[in-house]
Image 1: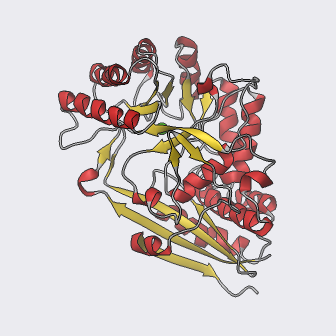
Image 2: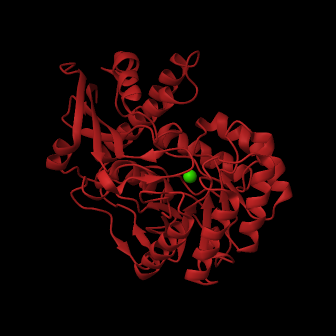
Length: 399
Ligand code: CA
């Protein structure tokens, strides 16, 4: 089955007055880079490349660098194709845009493999540990016209947290790192007060802190009985993260800004992560996700995937989540929160909610893992056309 053509779609959904902030930036739009790979049999596969970046860079890499190497190759041979693209781009790649692009291509090829076999990706990867997964709500960002209005921010996170509880979530993650520490502590304390002691709360700084600030915030989160403290330090500060992990009792979660098995190995070797959070659309795709899982099990480190994108990225994350083992295994979970959870972004994003013909369904806080062939999703072509701002095709006619 030969790869006949590769199409990319840059999707953008402006947020208008629904824009929101975190410690590093403000989202004024949601953007995704979708990839459709076509084969000489007519089978097509969908992928998504990259997160939290200007997606056009990955599109350029796909057409200018990757396409000439993969057009005409066997679409079912994901491993040699991955190895060829990674090796070819090693001298100028290894992280960031080239691996984002490679991730999207790999996901689309796995979609094709699954459709060719008539089975979901997780079945081809050895079989599922679960057909539903507990999700947690990612929200509690900074919103409104004046994000420095502390009283307003506290009222806002209380309202928002109450909304998640009413919708059936028992696990919620909120942002810190934009306001002064004392004010962010007040925000997180308000959330704990609002939801009560039984809820699982996590907090994410998006690497906003230096070491001593991270210690201070981490200790406050410990007192509030938070379940994990995410990306306290910049991703380059692996040693700092390892030292922080020794200093605090709250688990440290990290890995969304890291790439491939090699990057994850550095985090694991250094003892920098209690919970590893690769993103399948960025870390190297589903092929690399499997290898990272193997590494994580060797280091006895639980994995909760980072997920932030359109329905395609979430479908890829769900397929891999199906094959994450419990680390460690017990007959009945001693601590249910140590089972893999699924990050369910609750910020406005029509590319997540409207792009799939059949959107993901929540039963309480459980998300059903798609069971159809490949990623188990169909794209709503009308919605795709509505949000596509740039498209490009390489190939066609290798039959
Ligand atoms: Ca995060």
